[in-house]
Length: 115
Image 1 (cartoon, helix red, strand yellow):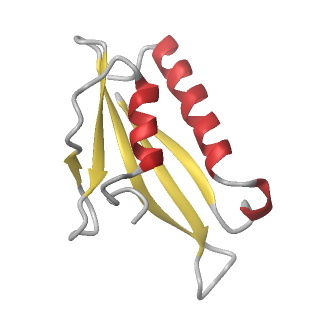
Image 2 (cartoon, one colour; image 1 turned 45 degrees about the horizontal axis):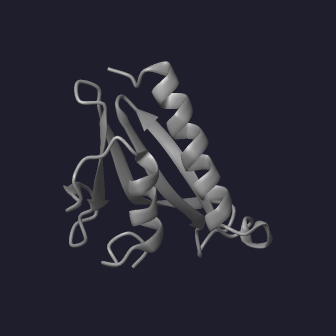
């Protein structure tokens, strides 16, 4: 099931603004933050040129925001640190305020999003 149109628009707008603030224009040729929408989820992905072939870009998942349409809330997941794939629920309560979860990712007090 896809995100409702208005919810997707709000999520895209807020997360894109976060990506713009997080990566200064001067380094965007070396670092990008991208959004990937799949069903009721939005993945925040860091992309960088591959060191062996800078024409290729590597992608590293940073955070996943999951929308629960029945409750109208967002949940936050972090990548599994010891594995190459997978997610684990971040210990923050679900929120109707996506900005609150974006701030958690930005501040990254636990070091699970940005290392």
